[in-house]
Image 1 (cartoon, rainbow, N blue to C red):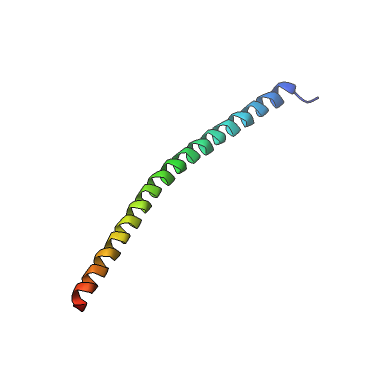
Image 2: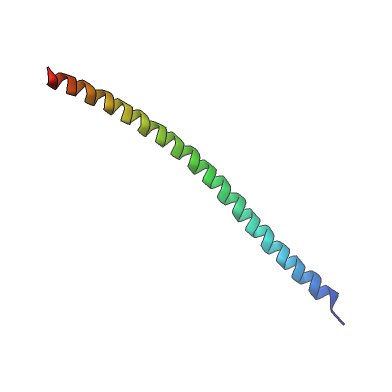
Length: 66
């Protein structure tokens, strides 16, 4: 005869493992979202710097042509 208590205990342990893995996944998603937000800010800053450099470079080129 199968011991019902052992089956319930094993299922409870599996449930706790699944809950722990779910917590880690949710935490990882939150960290990735925060990282994505800060990387977006940095990327926009780099795009702005690139546009400024292009404008300065064109002014320097115009100056040297004269």
